[in-house]
Image (cartoon, rainbow, N blue to C red; front, side, top):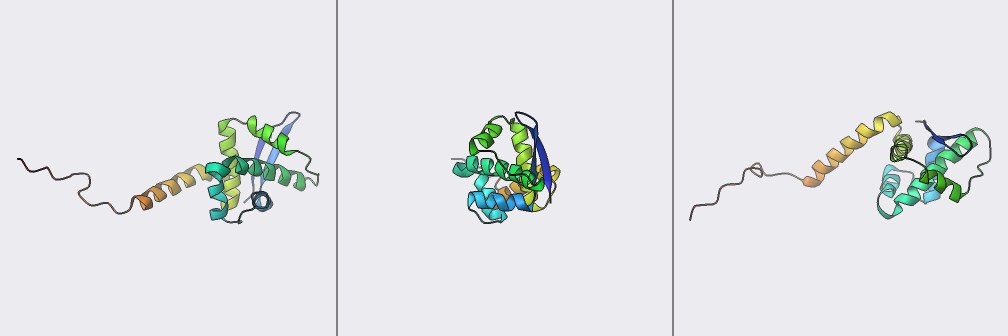
Amino acid sequence: MVNVFEIKGTDAPLRLLFSTYAVRRFTKLMNCAPTVSGIFPLFDGETMLDAMVAMLQAGLETSSAERKQAFTMTEYEVCSLLDGLTEEEGQQITYAFMGSVLGRPASEMPDFLLEIRKKTAELTAGPQPEDAGNPEPLPAS
């Protein structure tokens, strides 16, 4: 699945292209397995910033490769682009990338991730006793 997102650059809009090549490039930058379990956990905790920068760089590099142009941005410039994103833009870029990892359109990702969170919460909660919500009253003394 190919997902595209455009952000404003200093001179002109920049196109982020997320495809198999971008996912592969991300895994090389992050030195991780090209699997959901190798990629998704990187977006939480102490690796989150590196994952965000690598994701942005992979999308920009893929766009350059598609146009048969050399990728010339420095890590500083990629980080500066990240600094200029709104929270909403960052979220949409993440959906575009994760959609490419899962083979889904970016537009499906918010609902898909919400469903995963619900199922994860159900699984981690484990079985609940039937009367957990209605404990028996204590005997009168």
